[in-house]
Image (cartoon, rainbow, N blue to C red; front, side, top):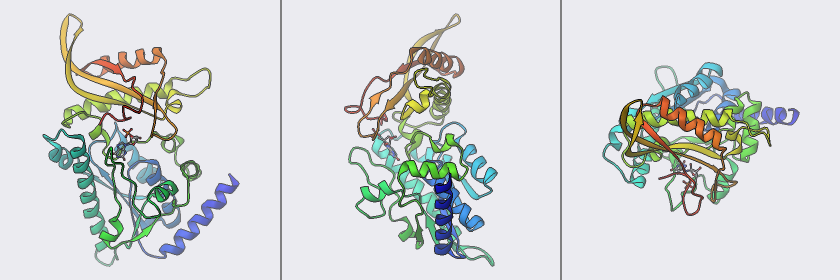
Length: 333
Ligand code: XMP
């Protein structure tokens, strides 16, 4: 709309003035904040921006390709995709403790990103290096951390914390979303041409499927989980609540599948199966500090479990999580 149009013009002018003819690096995660920051900065300075997308192998089905399609394909932004899945899975082998898994994933993520950023900072023949690091910090992040640039870490679960990166890399900080609330960031994203589906996505934790596979993370588990999760999300998007006209995806705040590395007995045709279990989790919340499990329609749950068990060989049982937060947390780890 008109107001958002003039907001974009101002924001673009401000970024151009701050950056001049220098170059900017941005860590793209596929989440709302970094995506909107990337789209805005790209609008302002085009190829002076390079996005670095670290794929840790713990993303949802086709997520990496979707991020590349959007930013490299449609927006024509410069994006470096780093496929680090082998590194992450290697370091996670044998590790079962949730906090230890988070720490490993967080540390590797920073290491891989820093190595890419260092290359971009160094530049190459006749091409000077980057001098800015852009981050999708939004206003609530600034407030939560008392005006410093780091994100808050809870004591219950350590979250990704990339605070201090610009200093360590010797880069100046560019934070064009610092004054915006989440709903303003979403509106800005839509005005910049990002698909509503991307801008209104449920939050996804930094450690990704690493905290949705209970205990040890294995490639096979991640592959099974991705397929079950994609079916659940598809059913949520396709099931419209007649009372509100909204999809169950939009009526829930977060929804996903969790992989349980336990086997149970089932029957298929005239054979017996002995396969893994998936739990479905869907919650409604306004602040993610407390949350209620969502009263999804039974017909939808039935369709979803039927599809998962029929389409994902290796899973023969689906359960629905009816625990609220507190005392349960939203994620299982
Ligand atoms: P819990 O499970 O603590 O989750 O009820 C509350 C919200 O935080 C997200 N979450 C994380 N986000 N890194 C993140 O970036 C993490 O390690 C992490 N753990 C939980 C969770 O998805 C929910 O939205």
